[in-house]
Length: 309
Length: 261
Image 1 (cartoon, chains in turn cyan, red):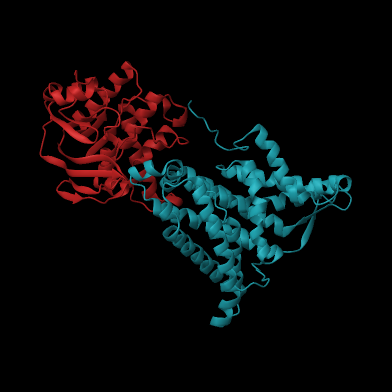
Image 2 (cartoon, each protein chain N blue to C red):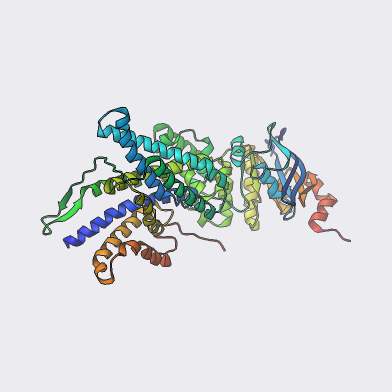
């Protein structure tokens, strides 16, 4: 039982991180109807910026404080993501107003490759580390209930708390503020949004900046856990089934989807792996999504599409 | 209708021509709209009514001609700039924000009038909070006016067609426009719904003094409520004047009923 719990918790923690990446997808899809394939590359780019800035600033300015370096790097990396959002809007999205979703999807594929390449040109392609002071040591819970207790990584707990706070904030922002309403309006209908005077370009810069922020947070957490490396951009492929499972338009859906897939893949790897062969982790999410789509095509929490015939 | 006094020309369309490749959608259309007036544009299907409206609204840029609004001339404007100038519109094939509630849809029409910035809204700082409730009050008056109180929180995608049309009108009204462009507000409605909609349009015109440009292909309703009527056929203007004058215009009769040979 202790072992089961340990696997489950480990899975949920991994799932939380998938959720963070998935959140970036959902935000952009909700607010502009664009399926942003570049979210994974944005995570890599943001993490690279963070890692390198926190290394460069102390050297350049000659101070030694870990905290100051991290704060400065965070601010600079965020500024880079906002600038990137602005450039994307200027050069790509503004040219594609009122176009089909597929056109926009293809454009984000291009943006993904750009981020991959440009990030490595700018920041280098080695493995870097981010150290924001998340505690690394594991701790044991329920030692009185189970023999040996349940091993939990403190770092994972912090990550989960950060992710939860982020989700709460974003939900409030979308539902309760005038800008959030404008974002939802743009997602529903570009033309109508323009006709009531919502500035599409500003909305897009805002939403890509927010997605950039989420990518930065995800990048920092993953980066401090596993190091910043090119494979981070492949995270997008892990987040893809999460988004579809949760429903493309649902912020809570991204979280629940991430947790389900995270826990599911770890448990099945451990308990089914010995029977049907390992490597279940790699395809588990996709198979789960396939079955969910058969029953609920809009995902678990997506808006049901009602068409008048 | 005593209170309403028709004023000077507020919107002036001069020599508008619009082509899509080889198709001439509009040729040399000129007409004007006076302040507080209820102006209709009618014509059979495919006459170019919606194209004309889209030119005024900045969706299409006509190849020739100018449009001036309050003496300011423009030919290449986007929809947002037009909205900022005080021109609102509704859509023929409803373009509502389907996933959002009736209230949120109409509130979104207040967007241009909101002054607080993103960060103030994010922390719901005093000014943002106050602003939101002021706009909410205005929107509630529109909801009362359109008699859609019962559906305030319903996502518009679930409402019947007639009510969606009202929400569309409500969103445009929330902008407090000087000119309201209505693209076939009564299309696909039954007689009762048409009467309701006519009443709302007349009330808007009467109570708020909003200038209204109305597109319709159902002649009956239009003739009853509008002050002056433009008639289009195959992208050309074939008639312009009071409903009575237009009704007896032989070209208009031919376009609508056909000519006997």
